[in-house]
Length: 142
Image: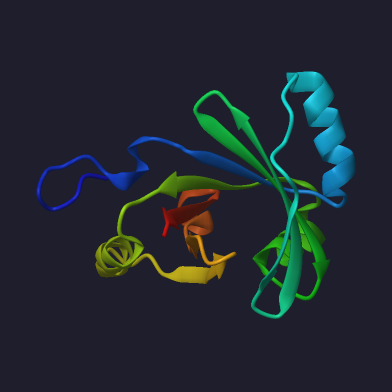
């Protein structure tokens, strides 16, 4: 997708791969051993009415995000119920999330869920699964 000015799309470089898991700590230990990299400190945060545990790894230019739902309902818990553990989304870092969401809305792409983590990261999951077979996420560091 090229924007209206002929510039590259925000989707030209994957920055993050999000994986929904039942036990983030257990999977993190497996990833640490297999890939030979240590995770960043585990984050527990509230997204709407849900509480999540997130473990992040940096593999080259790609960040791996392990997501465990501790309580409540999110698109992650729905994914886990329907599909089990696995690849949930591809994440793309953007400079201005509101601008990008406005452009995507004009293209007919809606937001599934959005929020903020630890007041430093804004995110929006896009309703792209039927179109692309996977959810895309926009990420903005504040």
